[in-house]
Length: 383
Ligand SMILES: *Cc1c(COP(=O)(O)O)cnc(C)c1O
Image (cartoon, protein in one colour):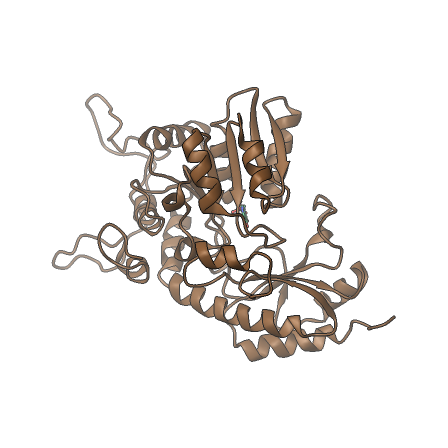
C-alpha cells in the first residue's frame, strides 16, 4: 500500500529522510549535533529553539516513520520504547482508567502497575483475543492499550473491530505496533488514535540502538505528546535517530527475510516431538491466523513462541545448547535471539515455564533449524 506521495513503503525507507536534491548535496543525511539554534526575536512553536525541542536529524527519521504508518504528521522520537509508552500514559487523567491486555510487553505492564499503585489511574486487564470483553472494558475507559500480536503469547486482537467501536464511542486507543512493524500492520488506518514503537527492535534492526517513537494523525494529541517530550526531557539521542534511519533503509528486506524464515521454522517446530505448542499467527492452525491474515499485510512477523515437552530447567538447557541463536532478551535485530520468558520474575504465571520466545533474524534458515534441532535433542522425551 503506497503512502500519500504514491510511493510504496519499500521505496520510502530508501528515499525518505535525505538532504534536498541539489547539486553537490550529500546523498546521506548528516548527524546534526547542537544543543541550541540561532534566534533573537519572539520564540514561536515553529522555531527550532533549543536542543530539547527539536533536531534536524530527529526529523529525518520522524518523517520517514510517519509516512510508513500513514500518519498525517511526523512521528515523535523519544528516548526509548518505554518512554513512548510513558508519554502516551501521560494523557490519562488522574483518577482515570486504562484497559490493558493480560499479555503485553512486560515493561508496559510494570509501568501501568506502578501508576496504579501511586494512585494515578486504575488498570483493567482483558484477554485481548476476546473482542466482547475488550469492548465491555473499554466502556467508560480513558485509554485502551492494544498490542497485536502480543508479547510473548503471540495472541491476535481483532484490531478493525475493536478500533471501529472505540472510534465510534470516542475512547482513546493506542496500539503498540513493535512486533508487526508498519510494513505489516498500520493501526492508524484501522482507527487507532496513537501508535507506539520500540524503535530498538525491527525499525533500527541491528541491536545497537535504544529508541522509541509515538505517532498520531490528530494535531491536538500530537502537540500534547510533543509538549510532554519537551518538558519531561525523555528526548532521543541524535546519533540514535540517525542510526535508526540508517537501519530502516533495509527494513523491508529484513522483514521479508526474517518473516519467511519464521514461517518455515514455525512449521518445522510444529512437527518436532519436543515441542508441545507453537504460537505463530502465520501458521494456518494458529487461533489468531484468520484475524492476522485479514489485518496484517504481507507477513506475520518473525517472533515465534514455543512450549516444550519439559520443565523450566529443561527449557533452559535448550537455550544454553544453542550456538547460532544468541540467548538474550530483546528482538527484531538481524541476529536470531532466544529467551525463556519466565526467567523474568515479573512475567505473568499464565506464560508457561517452558515457553521460549524466538526472534528470527536473517541468517540462513537451514543453519537456524540445524541449531534448534540439535538443541531440542536435549529434551528427554517421556521422562
Ligand atoms: C521492547 C519493547 C518495548 C520497550 O521498548 P524499549 O525500547 O526497550 O524501551 C515496548 N513494547 C514492545 C512490544 C517491545 O518489544
